[in-house]
Image 1 (cartoon, rainbow, N blue to C red):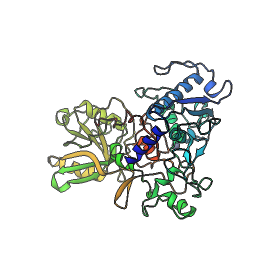
Image 2: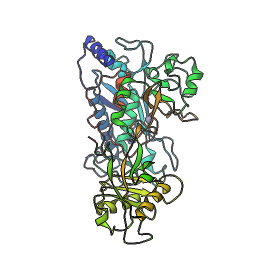
Image 3: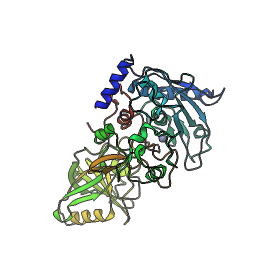
Image 4: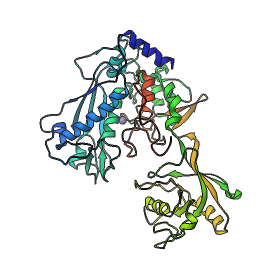
Length: 479
Ligand SMILES: [Zn+2]
């Protein structure tokens, strides 16, 4: 808190007033390509433009405006952008890339001496454009997504700017990708090599004063040598973010892993690991409690799989429906249980190993659902067969997913795969957070324009935030 107030004071000393940042898009595409592509396309409700280039630019400017509204700067932030062919193959693709174009240290009002700040943040803190001749952020996006030359079956970018629009199957929404990439350029990156541990031009980044090894507690700027940082970069799950704002706010954005807590009968009571469905709402943070009842359907391959309409709706209504995995999509089962009056659903695995994946999508599903192991499902079914009442709670483990304890304090983990993945390692959150975060290394289709823990991280590195993220509440029913 003192840190934030100090920065605010310095900004006032520089003669600045608090105002939202203006982020301008500098289109560097050539005539007829990328943002200038004249191909005629159909307007969308949220994107009224009718050429491919203009629709792309509208998405980009929308994302830029949303970031600008969240951050404080009296200096215009210039983001140069282009659509170019980027790495891709049949199954994976680089969707976009971005970063600061210049870095600055020891400028007027620099909160921390002898560390690199990205241009946009340095300008904001200095109250003046420290390198007016150069744009602040460079970004590019993979045009091959639209030309059908990568990601088998992908039908191109989707240019909606409204979170309420459902992205059509096979399309990739551009807005969250732009949102993610601009965030890198605004400061969600280190300038230190994740491969060698070497500082950029011998100077650590402000990032490195918060990036730390959980075992030693040492931040990257204070590590003994490059080799120690090189080792830290691949030390998953021990690469952590020790920033005070992220640490204070992590519980506002993260949950524990899914669990089913069976409360009766006593002989099977206990916490069962569970996979939370990718569709439908989350259970309330306090958990969803009810009797667990086996749903019976009208037949098909099995009358226990929930793939057809439920016939014992009287028993299921107001309770948690148990259905076995297989024969149809998870979302079909849960929707059938919902239609029969269930308040939640549990899918038990049809194979001995692991948990049901619980993937899928159906915006009409309004009840929470989870998958449990075959062994746990069998134990519940054995009790139901003896006409015993089984009760349980669909909820979340107390341990926040994607976090690690260092010297008594819990911190959010950063991406630290082994071997190192330059461009992905260190400058993203771990992929293990739940719910997913904007700044994980891969696009999560559950995200659109929510900036979640990015804002506390930006506060840690020195940004003054105009407003809390207006979407910074759990979307799926949490208050
Ligand atoms: Zn990224």
